[in-house]
Length: 345
Length: 231
Image 1 (cartoon, chains in turn red, purple):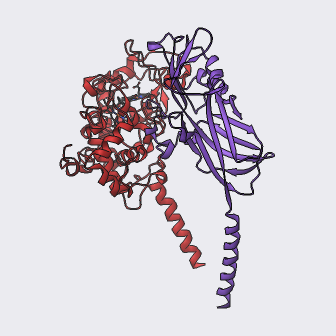
Image 2: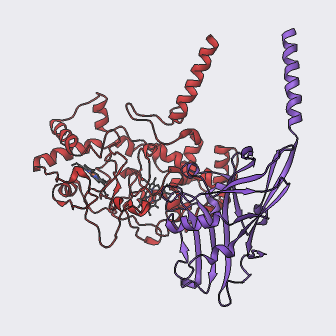
Image 3: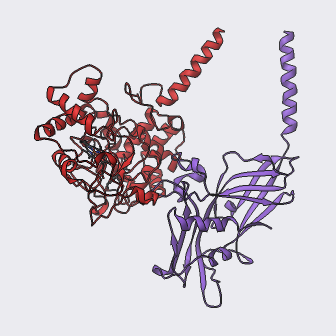
């Protein structure tokens, strides 16, 4: 009987830890958050793999002419979005067609990219690596370069027990690093944990938020992961119809993934094409910029009209979603110890 | 002590049984891309489509997956982790070999042309599914099931090139093809795929390229699925 108990406890432990992704605190689900979408049992986190993924994320070796890394468009201090650029620019200064999203809490993402074109975090990196406006390379070229570099074969050996580099292992390591980018330490979070409290203004902003915004930007991730048309007028130059490009379904025209609002203070400019420079313009849009169309979200058929004071309050609430600990966490930064000791070859 | 002895005897017995079951034989399945009656050659060979038009092929790669042997409508053997990338530039990849129980009798081979939808949404994979094999779409999720490229004077595209990258795993463009081929019980099976019939049904002049999951990809895949025959 005792034996049975021990076995079942062990099984439970294995079961639970396969969801948590690791047994040693490499990935923790914040209190009261849902279960992650990412299946960690197919890519169990280890310290070595996360470190290797971090090196890859910061290393321009992933681009065709070794000039641009993932971090070039996703920098830590802006919650891993592109600093102050509406449309990301990549290799040879080519301008892309979309604004880089923040890279946080990706383990909870169902789909990736503004239109959800990518179905799994592991294969996400293939898009920027191959895109002629971004890194202009391809994964087999990258693997060959890594295999011939001085630092990577030993790092892969440490992580996988094999210095033969494959596309699968390369991509899974990049995922591992990105999965660790959990942002859950904002003022809002500490209020939820009863460790601090909102000011009156923030409290009022929270109420306004709950009334008008939460159907799409739902807590605790501040996105419902759905694709919605929030009434932005079509940019006639970019002609980006969003989700429809992927599904070829006219009902998806002008729908984009509802983005998280965590760290919104730092992730300007806003929207899929970075059309708004600040939160005031975003609120102006919801107040008087919404364009009616067949696919417009029902919730937005009536504009969200707010007084000047209400706007200030709402913005003060949105600023409580900033997580400075995350933005300055040295574990997510440039891996000096690995990359600066790089023998150039 | 006696108990242990009994365990030993039983274990021994099972072992003997297992050993005797471990009699295997190999079935080879050879895929032969054809152009009409001749084996398809890439690059240098120029083929005639009719008296006026010609065609050349530069790439032919496709996935065969989920291979199973059946006998009179029951499964007799299923390959586990069954994903094979066949590449016409490497004849070794066209010859598949399966180690099956020596006493296995079969009357039918079943397989899929392409990659199933679950695998398509399961992230990065290794082996023949590794994205370095060039069969994973990059700007969107999913594998290319079948890739055929080349040129023909019929194509009004740049350099008269055509490219068919057929893929798609999600409704309404799940283009995976299930193929069942009756055959006699034998050690060596040749399966031909006639690309002349395939390409003759394609509108090379107006649609020389299909590169995303869509209606064309679905139609072309349905046609391809019917062109595998046992020889």
